[in-house]
Length: 238
Length: 319
Image 1 (spheres, rainbow over the protein chains, first blue to last red):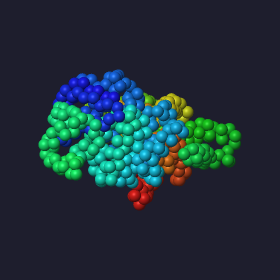
Image 2: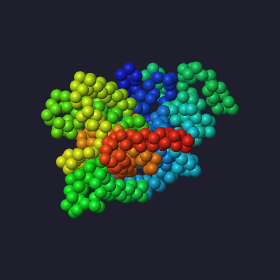
Image 3: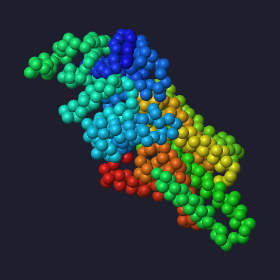
Image 4: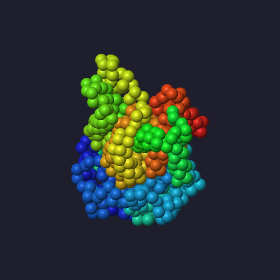
């Protein structure tokens, strides 16, 4: 469970307070440059901030680097392109557990295999990351995230630049993590996807929290310049 | 990986044996005392010096390319060559009577220029990426190179002594010059091998490496300090040897991929083999004239490097 109290970052975020519970997906939405990514980076203690961020009732700054890497797994918006095989990239997710030698144990290898299978890339596990498509690459990084075996998963725009099939795959993987009891926090731009998976929604507007709730229909849809449609009883936002 | 390492190790032993046997004097026609003198006082320190220098520069290049995430990085990027060169020419110009202290001057010059570059790069902010280190290195190196050019124009007498240093080679290398560099180089290598699992994660970028538990800044500083020590020790007795720090990391990556844990021992042995063989060629190709190892390495290294570039392009890989 993550709890933010009066979180502020100079010139970017102001007085943000919210809770993200276990077994829930918290979706952060907002315009470009509103401070969503900075908020995610505060949660993993990657930027300096004022206020308090608690993970499992302990201030995030009180955790050591390695301890924190066993609690939070983060997938950034832009993914690096190292010249390594998919399997090795996924194996990097076990780094917090491998200790001094960096050697993977049999159990680590099992976790890596099952993560690769979970994202459906088992047939290309030995291919170089540089030869994968954008969607496959994002799935590979998601497998790495799964390998980190953390109770909290944070994704910054996990469906950006992906085709519909890969978007669905990523969203379904996020939902599976929720079912496993993990705290999932992600930034999305597509309001339909938000409605589909979110248990809680945070709307960040110019660095302030302008909406926080579970009632999806309370969302100020006009904020996005969208129109709401009723399609066979299901809300669609176009 | 182990097979490749053993293969390189055998190659190193064979090249050392060959370098000990072949030279200006035919050792098989000498008496026992002469043979002993030639081997222990001339050839062995020279060959081991070449191996040590190649191992240090190649490993330094591998670490630098990892830390800066740039495959064009080489020891000269962090000011090793220009710093050592400037200190040597300064000594030659102003205290020529202390010429025997040139290795010490080269070591201090290399270390100080590295410290200056790292001080500026890491003083620019909390987040010091590879590109900032490279840019600071280029700026400081240019400044020191200008200083070298200025001094060599102002004091033309020292130019020949400086050229011998700047080309790089192992003639006259003795046990005394090797002892301290050998200890420092191996301490630095042990530290680098210990942090190599963390260095591997730098290829994911600072942010992801950090979320995987790596203290990116301290790992980068530790790696750079060790690399400075490696390269400064090498230039202190071998002069400014180019190419080995650039070419060997590429060869090793082709052999074993991008895993720094394995690339360190492989670079160590491959760099040593390359330097020993280059020095051997330099000694024997145009006997009795001796070509410095640096010239041979550039002659062989540059075409081989181009071949690697072209071969990889045909394969469709990235450099």
